[in-house]
Length: 486
View: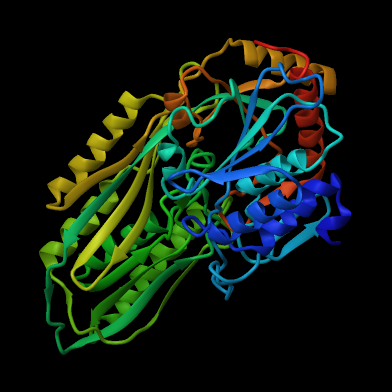
């Protein structure tokens, strides 16, 4: 079934366009050009700011010129993750959506419903002349998934709205009033290498088949992290005097690592015992995660002989640091039941000719707790003689349990669905925290349809939930058009 057969039709048509045009973080130019062209065809004002964010404007419906001015906000970019057997090129290839029952998913890749459904909804609103609403500005930001530089670069005074509706959360029936802040922590180890011995055999360890997922929204789940599993295998290698030559793991800071690998050398004559021990540990780890990671695969196969290997001291320091580095939930929120307050994602391992980089993304609802997590990560890696860089910090969105916009949106939800929405805080980096610092007078709230598996190839969006989301968005616009202030 094509997306064009789904309802609401305009929203899904725009989402198909978003699937057709590659839009990885920092590569949104083609999509922006297409949207600007569409705006010209529909007599909508469109411009870009200094950092590339796209700002669209639609005048109020006749008689609603004095209604509270709104900003509808979503981000243009998507996370680029694919299955190991996929040849998809995110810079050139279209996403291929599939309809499976109530779900839309992609073919072997992330779908980009995060945050493409929000963008598609905004474009559908702007393109429908029959809707009743007040003045609307649309803020479509760039580079949200790779550092939120679009939101951070938005200048004060560019937008005139007073209420921000962020369309970037992923649970139906919930209104979000706060989010976590985060920061990138990168540890750099200068490689310490030596010539490989002559009496060694080369092998490749591969950890694959993990679910992965969003490193904020899904960090509380019992998901395995490929980098952690690899570190446990490497620790076993060091106990057996096995040499390490190269490691890698993960691809994105905000995705839980699905795949990791290492190249090792085993002494000739000792390979049978060494492989038996590694295979036994692999089986034990598979058993540990059998309930949640049924497709976990750890393979050990012959590999090519490297020109150099890690020194023993360097190997011990790196493996010890990876084992000690915190990953997962550090603390749950005292104020919001079931919500993670502070966490860290041991995200990436990248080895070049001269260096090994370890990337982490700690998050917290409280900036002080985020900074405490940074200090712990820094201490782990500095004790191992790594250089640590902390960058791209962004603030959280401090939760406000009672606000005029929350009360208003709750009333609309009751009118639409006969029940109250759940007031929630998300352990992910919504752009509201950054935007609110630039526009402190804004009242902000976030909502969206049900999206599962974001930041992984299992990403999918519920069709029925999108219909409910659309109904709620239109009802909110129409009701807000009846008021001049909140």
